[in-house]
Length: 126
Image 1 (cartoon, rainbow, N blue to C red):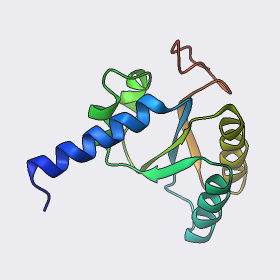
Image 2: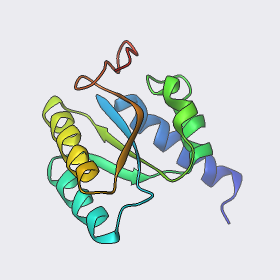
Image 3: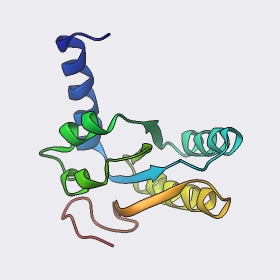
Image 4: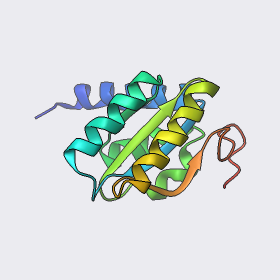
C-alpha cells in the first residue's frame, strides 16, 4: 500500500500531465476486449498520445486548477484518459478513439476537450 508521500507524488505527476495537455479525452473501456484495447494503445502510442487508466478520485484531484477541471464529474466507472501535447497527435487521438468506438468497445465520455472537439484553453464544450 502506498504511503501519503507516494500518493502525493502520483497526484503531482498526473496534475502536471493534465496541465501540459493540449487535448484530452476521457474514455470508458468497459465493453472493450483486451485485444481491441491493446490495438488502441499501440495506435495511440505511435501517434504520440498518452493513454492510461486512472483512479477516479486521483484524477478528480489532479484536474483541480487545470483546464480539465470541468470534466471532474465524468471521472466515474472504468475510466482511461487520452492526452495529447501536439495538434497532430490530438487529431490522431480523436480518429483512433473513434475507430475504437465503431469497433464495439471504447466509448468516449460526454465531453472531450481539445482543439479537435472543443477548446481545452477556454473550456468550451462540444
